[in-house]
Structures are given as C-alpha cells and as structure tokens.
Image (cartoon, rainbow, N blue to C red):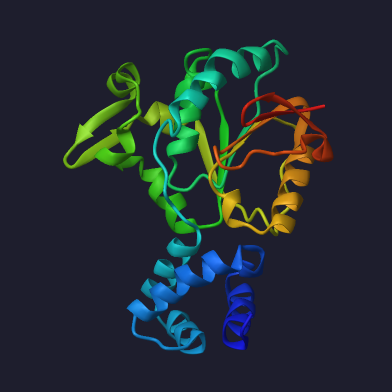
Length: 257
C-alpha cells in the first residue's frame, strides 16, 4: 500500500469513523482513484483536503465508498424462500419477531422485508430495525421515493397495495414506512444489537477483507437468538458456517445453532 493512500485511509478513519483498510484494497482504491481523478486531484492528500472543505464532495465520497446499489426483492427467488420457508418457521416460536436489515442502503431491503411480513402479520405489529453507515442514504430511505428501476421485481399485488405512482417514480405507503426504524450503524466499529430472530445483510460483505468478514459473521452470530436466521447475498455464501455457530438452513440462509 503506497503512503499517499495509507495516509488517506488514516485521515478518513479519524474524520468519519470508516476504516477503509477493512475493505478490499484493489477494489476500493480503484473506485476512489477514479472519483479523485474525475474531480481533478492528482494525489489522495489533495483529495482529502478537498473533501474536508466541501460538504458536497464529502457526501459524494461517502456515497461511493458505501456502494449504494439496491432494488426491491433483489434476487427474487431468495425472497420466495424467506416467505415460504424461513418466516413460517420463525413464527412458530409464537413471539413477535425481531428483525434487523443491516447495511440497508436506500431502504429497498427493509421495506421488502416489511412487505413479505405483511402477508403474515398486521403492519402495526411489525417493527424492523434498518441500519447503514451513511446518513445520506438513511435520509433518502426515510422519504420512501423510488425510481422505476428499483421496482422491477416488485410483485404486482404489492405494487398496487403499497405504492403510489408519483411523477418519475413511486412513493411507498406510510404504513410500510412506519414498520421500519432507521438508525446509523457501522458494521466494522459499532456495538451490535442483540436477540434478533432474523438478520438480513446482503451484497455488502463482498467489499470487505476476509478478516473483516469473519468479524462481522461472528458478531452477527452473537446478535441472533438460538435458531435465528442470517440471510446473506448471492455472492456471500458462508463455506464453513459452523465456525460462526451456524448451520445451513437453505442457500444463503444460516441458522444459529
């Protein structure tokens, strides 16, 4: 790692609490070099000085490193497994479910969970914790407005029931919004909440180093109740789930033993 980038990582951690050293270096450095060059800076030192002075540049930088690419019902078949198999099993406990959508980005994922759960429970009984490191995306998630491209996989019945066409996109209903509570949380640094029945964290761990991923899987295991489920993305299969106290429930679903 060259000194210019190394110093930049340290400065960013001090300023934002985000530790870029725990992200895969080649991917993250390439992504940031492209952004830095686009803004006309030739070194990371110059770029850091610029984002320290300019809030818009800082927000653009945070957006780039937190990789906010998502949509409703992403990888639809996996959501079918959640609806038909995982949730019915979790509801057998008879208690109200504690659900956490970690690294929730602009809110499509926790709102999808709320829609799936609405098939089993009144929305007034559903409360989902949704967290992300980026306060900008959390604010966007709270507005509940989405472009057409986020809506491709939404089932027609859910689209009719919970969305209103609004100019160039769609607004999600207040009853779905009220089922989700947003909060800032850094998966690499912050204390994890606990006693969860279901944790959904998809398509973010691929950007972390192996060591960082191991730490996150360990803490997710500690955050789940016995028989609780971790649902990960389609590129994030856990090959040795027992290492973290899990067993495979289905592809990309892991049960705490």
